[in-house]
Image 1 (cartoon, rainbow, N blue to C red):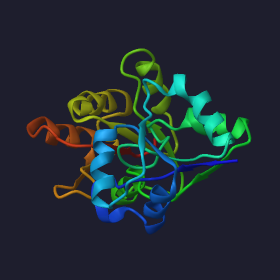
Image 2 (image 1 turned 180 degrees about the vertical axis):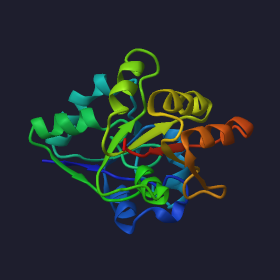
Image 3 (image 1 turned 120 degrees about the vertical axis):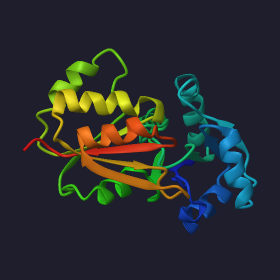
Length: 223
């Protein structure tokens, strides 16, 4: 019987990879990568020569069964996403579930993920929080925002830079202009920054200076 390893990779700074992650990636029979071009640069940097196969949201439904059969027959696979921990707003859940259903062992290594440093950096209460990932783009978005307006825990969202202003505007509309918000951008990278303030203040800041890079938004709970 083989095994599936879910291996976190750096979200920016390559020094954030663990020694164990490097070892697992070198020892695995195959690495499943969300984007082989992006991951190829990482593997080259750490002198990892393990063969890579593409595994992303557009093909995972078709390949899961075949991959599980190969692991059941003895192969060991390591799954990585472009950055961070697999299955957190990235491919990985379907394969993990299928492995568990078929009795294939799954081991998720600890490591980099964007929402944890963003939550801690926000200075908002972090004893209880809810991770929302990406909001629905159209269908269900308004319903979700109305529900989250009553949330009693700190909320965490992922967002792309070109949709940040729309999302912050929605927060002003549905959560109120004074709701505390923290936006962390380019975490662990050269131009990392965290902007804190009310929803209205942060929206004004990024309206004047449109953002670039990967973004995590942390929003305070309803008082």
